[in-house]
Image (cartoon, rainbow, N blue to C red; front, side, top):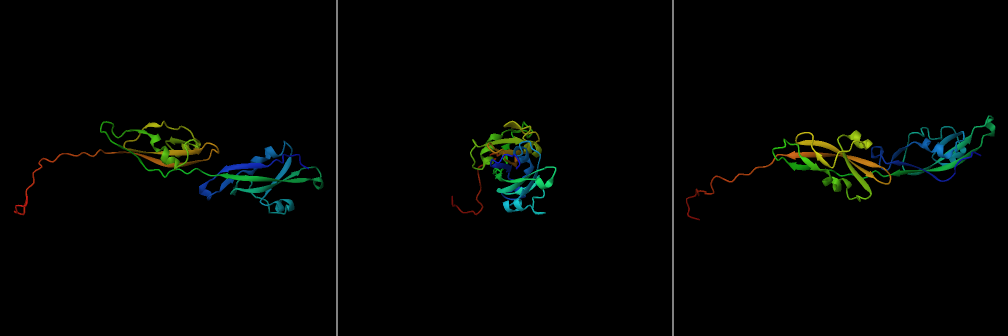
Length: 219
């Protein structure tokens, strides 16, 4: 039989809501290095144990490096590669696929400020004012909230901006907020609009005296 690790194995991936609720894309081949104990084996993947044992044509998972799945158990058929194929032996190993949920983020409402006139619409914002909204009720001890200038940086967790942030475009700028689960590393991203609004001015009336036009002495 193949000399492999038969301990229960788990392959984890983060939920991708764009692929469906509770769904994730798995690369099943990632488990081979830990399963094989550096031996030279063939690996085939099946959705049921019976199919793995029978090993009939076209019943295996066709693209194990891009397998869309919810949380479930799949089965790996590990086969030796002797010079005489008739002497090949195999073992079936169950693999748990675990989809870790994507964090809920927002919904985010604009972060507003009033234009003071002298700054030309370039206001200083404290982005931490939006942390609670970004967490959508989740515990701040379990998640990390960071802000970025563009979506690519947010997805790669690179070049986060300071929480005390001066808007770089007059009057409004869109940032991207990333909420990441500290345990699983799964994250979600949402847009955050920073907006500087014109100050409203009020002036006292020139006169507080008013004339009656009905010619009746009613006070």
